[in-house]
Length: 397
Image (cartoon, rainbow, N blue to C red; front, side, top):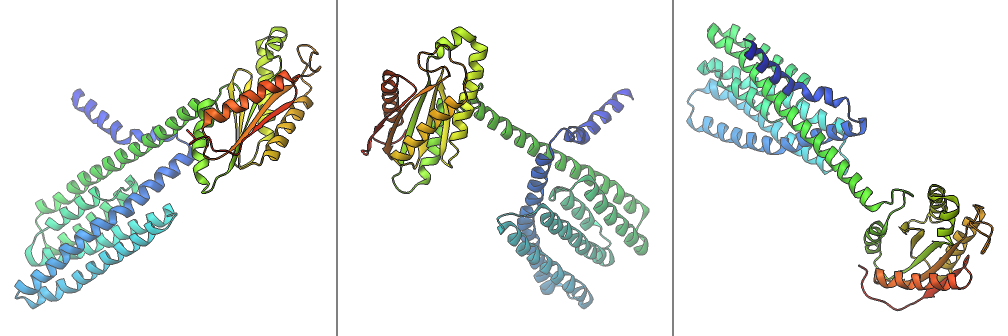
């Protein structure tokens, strides 16, 4: 007895486990999963309705060709026509809803809920005809199985639908005088169908939530792989990947500039103020550079140590030079105390600039900016030096 109770408890937890876990999800994630389920239900309508449509057409042809009872034909014909119209309408409406660029979850839910209520009503009509003509309730079993297996319904939706179907079937059975043994099958079958519906919905929803969370986690890992943890800027890998995403958007050659920025005498700064203060200096310089480069295709990265690399896409040489000079002055305006006054009483940077027309090779352009940076340092620091080339240097990679 204890073993049986434990089995039931474990199965119950398996069926309803996602309800407690669901509370830990963000509202945005819940909305995404709800929309995915709603759209999936609409997608399922199309093949399901097409199969039922084909079956009903075959049934109608068979009845017309083989049945000699006029009353049977008269009963089945209008019911069959209404079912065919329902299937055609469902296919067309599902197609129109899915064709929209943004299908609202509410519209999708309204469509598939309305369909299943109307389909259940149509099937109950056929079940009534089957009881009257053959005394068979097999179609009721088919109705419950189809309702359990095809739509992804919440427990409230499926429970309401199954209870309504079962209540109508009891009325039919009582009116038709079916045996009690047959009537006892109705609630039992309905309960098993509801459990099946619940299991399918729970499994699908948990799978969608897990996939969405996995996607979020993968995106976070990708962001971490592309981001410098100290400054929040992208790293070497990040700037190359972003350029690979941006440059193909242009269908014509564009001039791209690199700014190689180096904090002057940063080793002395760390020796005098300590590495913690040095990290604060890096953050403030990074924030200033990022504040200056807010163009739609500007990319700012920490390339290593005290060096920053800025990519400026679709800039003229004069614009690149002005951007470098602005960064130079904005960092000086921070008035961060320098390690000594060899260059300035405040922290300064040296900037090497280079530009080239696309397509270009990343390493080649970087080396040009790096050579310009050394010229700026040899010129006394706290200044800008620039290389500019109009020649292609190969494909970007």
